[in-house]
Image (cartoon, rainbow, N blue to C red; front, side, top):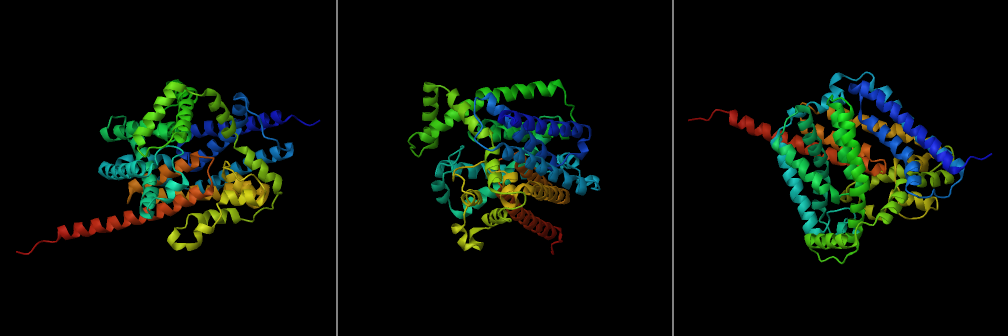
Length: 453
């Protein structure tokens, strides 16, 4: 007798949640052993595991699919997580204490606050230019037309500064929690970003909560009711009040006639929202549509086999996609990797929920889940190694690396392009730090030379 689709989803989804929950609880007992890989394990299991429960609770319906493909999709997720954990077990077991993520986070006081202030000021100015000169500020505002209107150097600057922003945010939270003191600069940054994050999207809001809890755990605080109850209440308010308001506000802002004045457009959007109220029905349908990210994976597995697929073409296209345009003149003719997959397998050419397991399935079939877990695990290990090796020389660069990669590991619905983009931008930032260090040392040597009478 064939099992009902809903039962299969809830059974495998529940097993995923249970597996990563046990892993998380064990990690709390050995916090010194927590790595960037663990973040990806937790979030992957929770995102795919809770999806069927949230879909049913929201009144949504599972897209049509063969039950065998559904089962294989979950097996692929387990293979992906196994690949991540295999890398952790192999590479981290003999790591030095200085490589420990907990120790890296606790080195927050090595960073000069003036350096943080400089980068945050530049980031804030560039963000204002994006908002008021090009209309790119909130979620959904970065249309292809607006992005192509950006000067290339401004686009590159924003890409680099976005990485520094994650380091700034990580520094601000860690500085406060680790020292258990109030500091003006971290407090200002946290307050400003908490207020502005409403415009950026639900995932960014959740990441801010996650980052706080993540640093809270790594800095040695006890996980008890004092933190669990407020965190739960915050999540309830986010899902039931903030998220519905954000979705309604964004829909209004994206569909009103733009005047070119960002503040005026947002005022109009807020006025219309206060008149119409929050559209809870639209929010629930949006949640039901977006939360089930496994649909694309299932469709891809239906077109591939155990070991056959695009033979790495999708991943290779992701690499080409992040090569700077001056170095790759024909870049404009390349297909977006997501569209390449959908086009090749005859899937709808719409905005699909990209994720690493799906790319693995597309390139190498079911076994691609394991292979891409290994690949992502290697990348996350390498990033942590880079962060550790630069702690004494460029401590702020260490926090930039940890902050930006934590953001990557947190987002399951993201393609490999994001990882390769961070690799590219991290290399450029490292060169900037290196050149700035050479210039500083040169100036110090000059000042140390005795002046002749």
